[in-house]
Image 1 (cartoon, rainbow over the protein chains, first blue to last red):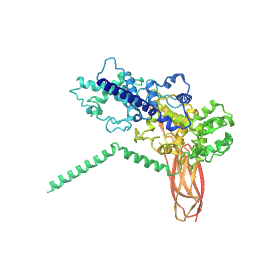
Image 2: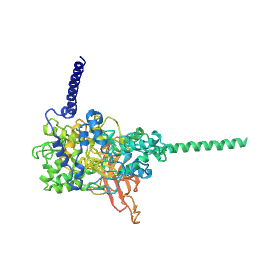
Image 3: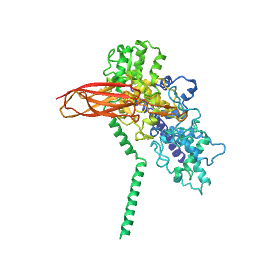
Image 4: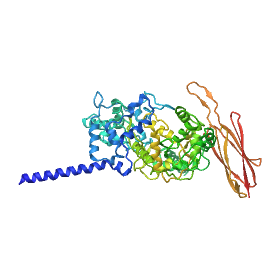
Length: 232
Length: 277
Length: 108
């Protein structure tokens, strides 16, 4: 009796899961389906057109390859449209892509972090006009965030004013394991924001090598250190 | 008695000074986003009255148009007819077997009727990129042809399968994450929330009408470079800021993006040239 | 259009006594005088210095300009229209360039 009931429930459960899977498939298509009744474009065509538009300079061909997470994120116009499967996949992939500095988590130099946060240079190349030098580095954080009080910034990302205060980090409890854990959280967000916010607008600075782990540590210190102007 | 008067006078002056100091200090404080947007819109309204300096380029363009034999060029309404040309571009051209937008068509016609090679055309297009106060003939030609459609509404034919295909490709590219900063056009120019990057308010392709407002004023006269900026120049600058590889003007990528943007802008009135920072 | 050429726009017709807006855009780089901080070398700048507005050969407005004005300046001057005739602008820059431009207005 119990066995029959158990098997019956299992069968219903399996049917339920398979229909749910089928339902999820069309969810991936809506962008492609609603848009074109007669015209169908393949990802290969899109890729061809994209590549044809770039200067064929071998120095920068590495920029053209999309990695797996980028490919997943390109299918959905925004985070809200993503099905839980895709969200899960990206989070899984990105959690593997975090590297820490060789000395582990430590309080870095917030003055260096401040310079990186304010600098908008680095990575911009063009065959005309100005190009950034290879030694220029920066995160351009003010483009999307408000960080210090009174300094103009963007509103694409959340305001980071008083970040360390919000995390309740003070001079006394700076070196406790809890505070270092908070520092690690912030480090992870800056290094690879997609491990917690998949497909967000924020670049994965550390993963792509835009900023080295030590530089990301300095920036995290700038945000959380009690002495830093962010928390004054 | 006199002492009381004296001390109260001094006290009154000190108070006035303190209040004045507060008022001056208040002006230094950061403006709220709404105030800032209001001031920028006021500025835009003031400089929109009157003559746009971009019209200087339209006059140069009228002569350059003849000089490069572009009166033989068919923009879709017949050879040499520019009134209303911008309103129905991008479209499919059977002689080139490609969907083309305005600038790509001008580039093609320069190759056909002015005897330029593709490398010369690219140099011609990029002659003013990265410069300021550059009296470029290419920008002038684009300005002249665009201004001839002033007042008309965008009417891109999205029923044509080739154009529709380009529209779809453009839409996918708009949302394709690429490059070391994982950017795509949608990072800044999509979404329902009104956001700004530093102090600049961003338009969004997801909010209705905004793409049209942004695109219907190109070529746009830029006060900081004292010259007009065409659509392909704007794509190139966006891609530089997105840390994408260098942009090839007149490529299929540009046509795809143009088809997507102008297709989304269908119905907006053309008001060339626009003016911006 | 070379440096110094201008687009001049006035309304074609006006009522007597009406204040019309004379609008113009002058092609000019308006570069300010600069002193290179590294080498100390000075460049004197290239900008318009004076603009005069004549109505039937009578001086109506005179404007002194310097490098603070942005490139390709748009200038609008008010003019009380009391007789038909020719509106002329004459302008010069600090390298000795002198130009003139005219337009006609009919006053009822």
